[in-house]
Length: 144
Length: 208
Image 1 (cartoon, one colour):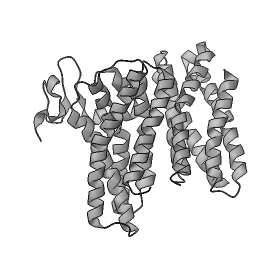
Image 2: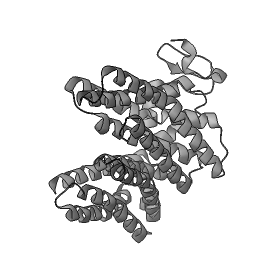
Image 3: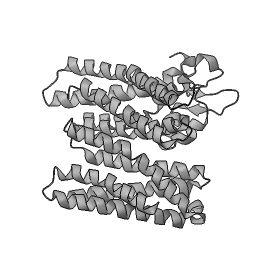
């Protein structure tokens, strides 16, 4: 499960790396950064959930299932970003990434709340992670 | 505005002057409560029945959201010399039409898709949830219009498209709720609904 999620996250995040690379000189570096952020970000999210979410603390597998659901709801944003960039030539992948990562966090939180998690562990932690992830990607995309 | 406009005809009970919705069995929910509830925690709002929310409120949210979004698109184009005032007004009117009839059509498509995945639900409730799902678009559109008018920024993409994207979360929550939390149908239908709205905006905004 852990490997599947890591591979899924790196693939989905790398799409945004490719889209950002189209507008940047150091494009391939951005793809690598996106892949790294996908793998590292998901590890951080699981770690935060294990630390602050009582449901995941009791059963770490629940955390992976929640992240898996979150990643599934990240997919529509990836598809829309590809269509927007490829067909309409709107280079606004950052907006798609931010909204997508927030949807990832919200869907992950919704799953955990269904399992009986508290509002802090089930809603606040994934949303704070999403905000941080979005900000880091914005800074990295600007830096390269 | 008539007092009963926030309540559907089958559920009209009482309503106070601050546009709160009251039924015999449910707690009051203001329009602001619906908008911010749908934006922050759509799953929790959907746990309650939406049958007491009137069509006027549900499609007022999406209609005004798209009206303001298209108005910003028009203002951006007018600033670039591609549109005149009349065309901006026409585009805003199209936005209102798109935010009501267009959103309703996408809602009907989602309802049909949910039926296709073997879940039977009341179409009216799904359509109401779809109108309210554009609450984030409304909030972004209002903020964007302020920046557009006061600072003369081009905000159609920065605020408009962002608002449209943020609506995907309540939309996916709605579809997931009515698909009994099945992930695959919800992801497929959310993607198609998102594409329909994005392509529709691009077509009407003359981007194509």
